[in-house]
Image 1 (cartoon, chains in turn blue, brown):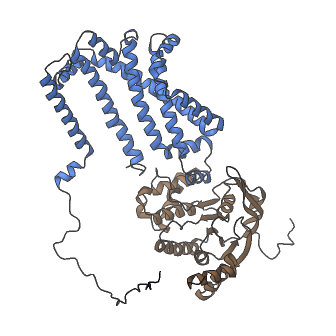
Image 2 (image 1 turned 90 degrees about the vertical axis):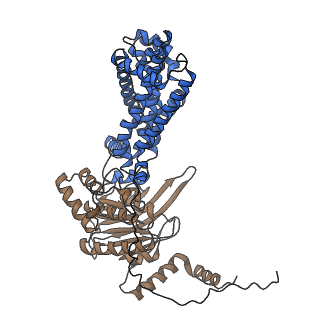
Image 3 (image 1 turned 180 degrees about the vertical axis):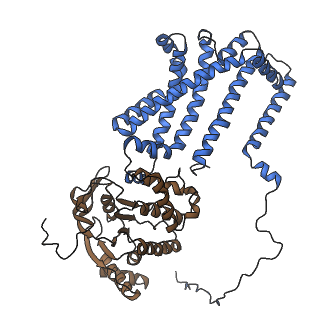
Length: 294
Length: 267
């Protein structure tokens, strides 16, 4: 190009220095939030509002449908829950379920812990864990139930077996991923303080991988719940008192549909309780306080 | 002991003798450092300087005991270094060297307790060292609430609290903004004046080397070999001269001339 390209020169400007002085009187630098803004910031308030909204929708639709064999209304379901708790067997059924659930969950955590520790200490252990998770994680726990019945008979043993299967793989997978994600700097720092082996795992790896471990615990908790209810639906009658799954199945056979909903409602309510109270509390005193999660 | 050859100088605190360090990548065996030898004496502010990738961090890691050299010896007070230990504490460049699940105070206390200090003494020493770096007010905060410079100060306080024989710093201020970096360098020198620790400091900045160091080890580009060991003089003029000298050592006259020509728009 022949056009003479003249490079723009920075303009010549004088320097200046000035005093900033005081802020104008009456101008507020920190403006407090309004009451509404403050209330809206509370998680529980927003979530409770959503819950109420869903309940209202349910109530309105069920009332207009007016057929409690298909869809009992929210108030009818609450009634059935109340009656089930006070006069019926709902409380003891729920208790049976929770007991088995906690037993299976804890056993699953222990086995997952052993497998993951093996996986981080030897390369063969890591291969083993990867192979086993790839094989068994996609396998629905309930598909193992017929086999479990054969091995452990009708009873708690079979349910515990499928529960451990439901908890073990997602938890081991998450925990192992969490351990592998612990940064080099933290590892070396731990080593400089002379931490080795089990002490290194307990004092450095587990807290550093805690966000991943916690999410594994949550996922496997949900898996355990759904596996348990499904297992009870299949053969809950023979396993002693029977749990919530059996309660649902029994009432459906007798066309006590509000009771079916009461059973489902209890499952959901317990799930919300664990998620919203227990896991939330654990998060608050750990990963949130440590700034690993918002 | 054959004391004839070392009659002039006292026994070095750290002796590196013909050290070669290699590491494996997926398909190569890379030699990072080749037959490096040098001594660090008590009270030194020993800077290892070299271009990026010359193996200076690798060399520091093998002094810390994280990597084993394939050849040569690293002797701390005449004893060979075999593994990582609290007698050589490393301050890293990364801010995530503090345990996020412990408060500032507990980060220091934890390190002390794990290395065998009683809990009471640990609390006292933590408090004292956090005061030294000006962070006593922030002792109960968690690391994620601190700025980058404050985190590095905590790491420094923790390292000093351990009263290690030697403090290893791997570009500790490189991830800080320029103003904070400048202040941290001054603070480090002030702390050295106060406490008198022995420091091995890795950097790729010539400027930082002449500010922080009392003696500078210049390493050649990959693989790292010892190019020079220089003393840092007092006075700004002398330092600027040293700065230019190191520049020549590292980049040669050719590179300097090329840089000058590029600036003037020639080809």
